[in-house]
Each structure stands twice: as C-alpha cells, then as structure tokens.
Image (tube, rainbow, N blue to C red; front, side, top):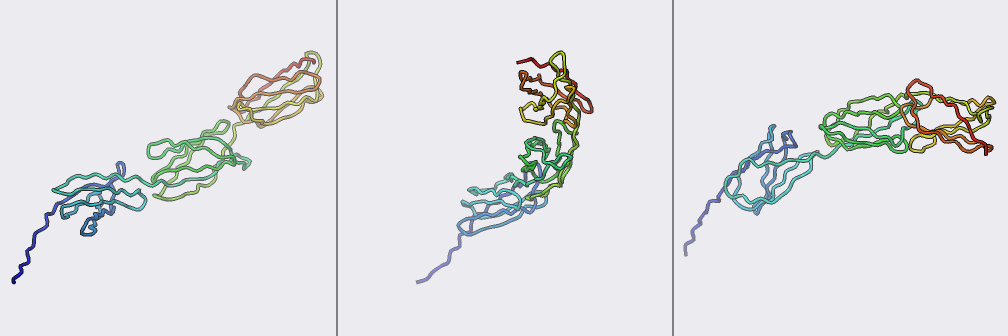
Length: 260
C-alpha cells in the first residue's frame, strides 16, 4: 500500500485594531488570542495600533496592561477584520490625607472637591479630619472651600495605579466675636449661661455673664449660621434667631430675659 501526505493550507485572516483609554492611546498593551492551536500574542505600538495574522476560527481575545482593567471576550475570525477598538478602563489610584485647623485639630465631616480628568470628585473628611478618594493618573487639583476658613488649593501629580498620601493641609480660620448685655429690662442679670450652637445644632462654645450682665465669646469662626441660648434659673430660657458673624467683625446683642 502507498500513502500520501496531503497538506491542506490553513485559511488565514488578518485582524487589526486600536487600544485606548478614553482619549489616550495605549502602547505596549498585550493582545492574546487563545484558540484550538494555542496562543498567539502581539503588543500595541506607541499609537495603540496592533495587527495579527491567524488561522480562521473561534478565539478568546484578551487585552491587558498594568494599571488597567483587563478585557476578555470571544471573537470569531473569518476574513479580514479592521479597526477593532478596545477601550481599557484605568484602575483608580488612591489619594489620602488630613485637613487641620490652625490648632492642629482635624476638621471633621466637611466636604470639598478634587478636580481630576475633567471631573469634580466630592470628598468628605471623617471625624478626625482624614479623607480618602479614588482618582486617576495625571493632575489632581484639591479645591478646599470650607465655611469659616479661608479657601485654599493644591495640585498633586498622580501616578497610574498608585496610592499617595498628601501632607497635612492646614486651614486658617476666618474669625469674629460675639458680645452682649443681659438684663430684665431694668437691671443687669449676672451669672447667666450663654451657649453658642452652629446651624446644625452642634454645641460650639459657652460663657457666663459678669456682674454687669456682660458676656463675650472670641475667636468664633465666621460665615457660619449660629444661634445662642441663655439660661438662668430665675428667668425663662432664651433662644435667639439665627445669625452670621462676618470675618473680623463683632456681633453684639442686647437681651432681655422674662421673669418666671
């Protein structure tokens, strides 16, 4: 018997495409085609372009690069395929730090924005003034404008797929003061407790009136709504309407308490 080897040429197809991330072209991305005959690999050039010539058939195509989320999908290659487009999503980086007042205390539960990749990312400090946010490589501009403090900003360069701790940001308070006199309409009322609250109802500071019914509170953050409450066991409790202290100014009160 005679045997003949018959070679049937494989039908080949060429595929080409571009790898990018939003508007950024991605070079050195690895493109892998896994099929019945094994794996075929290529890399994108500096402009994100790639091309492969492979036998016709079904493949699993995978595109990956460090710092980006991998793409994997099924593809049927039969005939030329041009201009395939794969958009990789960047893995976020982490930026974190702390915001303090001039006394070195964390500024708690206050929000600000980080501008990054043309987006404004809202961030909020915790109970100790610490914050943490997910951002992307490039520039991150921290825009810190918190009521009662002078606004400030900071620009940070963010590396891809990284974690960066920023130096403490110390804000300078805008301050004013409060003063006033407490009477019953005729004579001053000493030893009355004066309590200051912010617009959220959070206790802020307190003092007592002196022998002439006079009281004062200094170094009060301005531009915030406040109200005061006054207590004296011989008189009905007093609560003011809300008010705002302007930077560098004094808010003065003349208060008349009613007898019980």
